[in-house]
Length: 214
Image 1 (cartoon, rainbow, N blue to C red):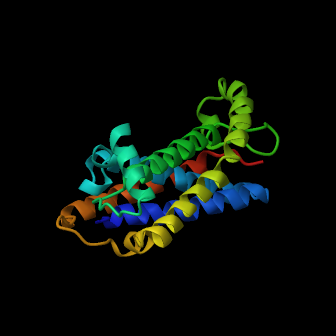
Image 2 (image 1 turned 180 degrees about the vertical axis):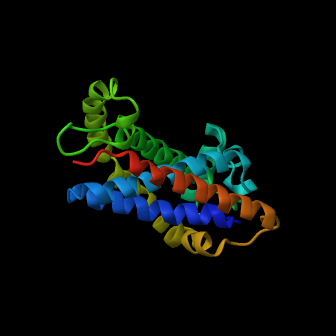
Image 3 (image 1 turned 120 degrees about the vertical axis):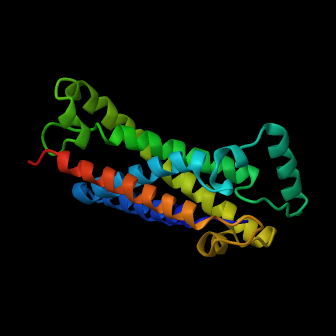
């Protein structure tokens, strides 16, 4: 199993930004919540692109599988057989896509939410005629979706524990070290990934400049 450096930085950056966004949102720290949310949005944009042009193990085409393979992998887990995969295993791939989908929906709704009094999200300034009609529904959906964050993250953590205790697989340490395998990321690809990561996160954070001040 090999994880390239851009993917690893995305992963841990996503952990930090989601945690920060959730905690700041619960405490009503609007400015911090916006910055963490924008960082997560930029990381998400990077991951979507990297899922098509990144290292083999980061590409969606190489770890998304059909029901037959997923069920076979589930049988292996129940039988306590560890089947090796170069990247995400079939069940892990579903968890990744669920998390990306949820965070993507929260990013879209968060960028348009507002109340005309205390806060207006960055993109509302770009469409002043449309924003009043969007802000309320987007804010409502943002709140509805946010209750799914903890259950989905908890499921992710439980899966990691199950792999460690049931199958003896050290998935977390591999996401730190990069793991080992036959196909290593090329230095050129790594540099391109780091540049793309910086561009996406920097571009997303710059949207905070559009946020109206009250």
